[in-house]
Image (cartoon, rainbow, N blue to C red; front, side, top):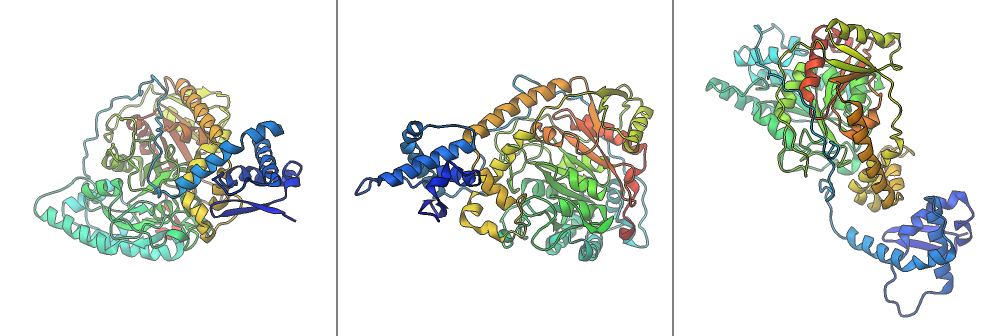
Length: 570
């Protein structure tokens, strides 16, 4: 059927020349052929005319797939350049490019010549409540950071006791939820004992001193594997802590577990199992910060670290009823975290409340000089409780059915000025190619080696196929998408002028705000069928997390939505 093979490197495609320009089903192979032509290196004799004709038709077919119509003369002129590019690709593939190595180009979320719209707020003066040791430490499973900090600082509960209690609880929960990839028991207990020794010597590091937490298993942590949730990396480890892990260690927090994520940060299916929703364990927890949301909602950790590229904090928080924050792009260093999309990845806290999330963000925020050329952000301090009366809060006028309309009444009761938005679409769908191309580059070696076949999910919408498909995106179109993204940044910046925030359904403009890098706060609100909480989201100005969290905290303090917990986890 195929009379020759067009190949490059270790990839091979059988192609029938007659089908290259006539069969739509063969167009993807035509496009592949553009990159898979053998390099034109010196040879003892020139190529046969039939070989050259096949190359010309392959180029024409590939061009047709991406919307260009070439005649035979134009395609023939391209033969030498395509062959030179193929040789360059082969040479580049001989160089090891580790996952963390970012491209030389950089992304900044602010439009050119724009300044951050940040409202200066007084920092929070932490006042610890009066707290007494309960008879059973399990009663602290859903306690907030301030309550636990009061118990630890007064030495009512030792850091080691707290770590042991949460480790035991998380192990029990994990049997059903499959939310843990590896427990960090030895490290946790050693850290907890060190924090107790500091307390005995009169040193208290702050509100996170001795607080047990979990981290999504794409963050490097010494002494534990960092598997990225994927079969090819189950034994991978790094001899350093990610910046966020190191900063939490410095703040006194105790890492007790590396939590599950969908393989290579997609979904809730990892190499061990599907992570479960504690409100309904027959259902997956969504992803990719699957274990972080599941463990937090069930009371297995006090807070957790998640990441988001396109919904990986928002989606599992909605599914599991968590409070969480996706900060502004670049607000938190990603050094030591798996790279999926260098211009879209963000790190954020998932916690009991927005007050707790603010304390965690204060500990992890700020540049470290190791996360590329990110735009310097105004310093972040957890904000004090403030009067939000008169703040302008936008809302999409057509996105509030009766079930969610109550959020507007709750905000009106706080005295905010609600501004209906009738925004037209920004048509951002085509820009998703940015994420997929960068992800394919981040896992280039995985695709070329064939080890992508080891991943459990092999469907058309799973990473192995998306990586392969993205390799056929022309570099010109990727650059054009980034240029269109610049226009999107400017348009969103213009539309959000004068607003403290926008309150909206969780997935409203999810792609747009992830492309633009705007911060979004997510929280449980109301109730879905079956008793699980629904959710609501607030999106703020770039770098204005203090005002965003002050608003969201004021709303949350006036309600009790976030105080509900899964019945099975009590």
